[in-house]
Image (tube, rainbow, N blue to C red; front, side):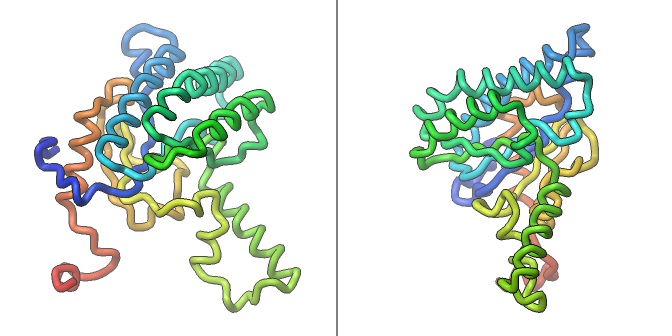
Length: 248
């Protein structure tokens, strides 16, 4: 990757999404329980949130818990839910101090009621912040979100509130749980796997993707900055030719 000195602070991506992968493998490689990797991963969330805020990123979306994760062993699910809630509660004061607001996207109704209530309290406490928006994708699935959007459109069409002939891409985008923020400019996946794992499928149509073999607990501020630098060295064409982009 390029060095951090290559970063142009006038061209910082507005929205960075991250698939935080490798917690379990990080722990296993060290002879620890998988839960130790998740605990260490929380420290990475803190430093990458700080790095994003320092650089002027507007939205940072973290794939925190997928709908597929509900199928993991119950003990691991329970530990993850508790860790997420406790970590967010612990970090709320610092989020406020750093002017970071917190949001959630996903099938939140599947979460334990007490966990959801505690997270809602943290969200309310940071609602006045105007800097970085930290978005936790919790109990999230892109297919779930798209199906929900399609269902809402169908209901509105059946009620006569939408002309089916007028339905377009914007009709779907505005009904997704991500409608409050722009599509990601950059998607980072740690842990080396070359897949998007049902994450923001609609939104990443023209997102630049960077995959690093570094496990999430080992992902540093410099790794994040280097990803930003690499992003800035790419040409985003959005279906146009190289010559068309240069003319623009």
